Image: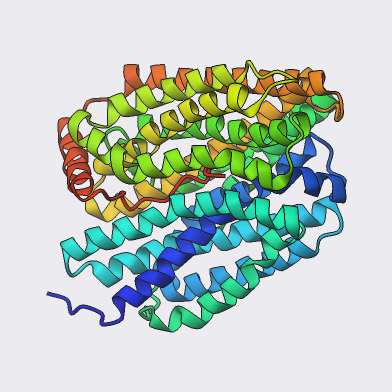
Length: 489
């Protein structure tokens, strides 16, 4: 039996703080977007790059971060990730042009992709000696995600309203320095031999970035234009190269045999569509509140707190208990359909609307759907995997959520722009554009719900494992220790 690390609970504080900050890094952006647009000269269509630059780098490099953590040592990669995140934050805060801002956000995403998997590895190392302690540690670590999302919404409004938007990035510098100083409580891990699939990581990240770029530019250049066709073809070629590399290299980032795990494919499809529906909803809701209803940054952030509060309550307390009773499949499918209903309700927003009538009830329904579907989809993807592949399954499902988020936001930004959302100051046109985005997001969520209910296998062993974990978590009112949704933003 392994000996317990005497500083493990102090180490957990550092790791939970890292989880809190990585999630807050996505949520803190939303309410600051209109001010950043004014100061940096983003067009309405280009503004989504402030979010997607982070998501593409984070999602595209997440598996590479996990591999580097295994080979070079988790503490070393955790520390490196914070150095990179601090550097990206400095660039983003000091940016005077739109594309310097985008570059800073991408660097932040690289840092997050190193921090998240190495933090989970360290947590497992610290508490693997005792399953009861591991359960408590995972619950505390997991609860940091919705807490970070909620704090980001509030602090984003506070900093933007009473200081200035660069402060949403400046805050990471002192916190990052303090975290680096505290890493001495983390266990040192030696390196080991092994290959790093740099080509695979580069191919999937570049392919995703090129696909998003093509979709963003398509409304202006034309969907059938030579440039758009070549860009989409290039993105497809890069993503195909990634799968070829995974099949041929000795130590791939994503061994393709993992897809034989029961329900992994259907759970990842659900997560992709969940991200593609949820993230655009959050993005356009922020813009509707500020650009149509005229809310300031703080008021906009406060208006979104009921959603994040509901998410936090359900994801930390209620969803696990529902899973213990019903299993993952009905919650994933039903949650996506509830999300679709909330989005369809949001599509009825008016240029002269109000928060209480047009936003609050519909947003709470959407948040309920998200909170029902997210954790069950994560657990469905992981529950059928062998113990030695659980980390890989978790990394894949987190990656597909980020990929769905990036592509969904790019596509629905194109839809919204084509329907009038690019006409700043024209409230009816802006509202029409945002409404169209909500309608299409609802369609994506509805397809995800129906497909999940029709396609996801009811694997008895995986379902039993999922319900056992959920029952243990629900009995203590705890959240499962999975990466929180970047969509708490």
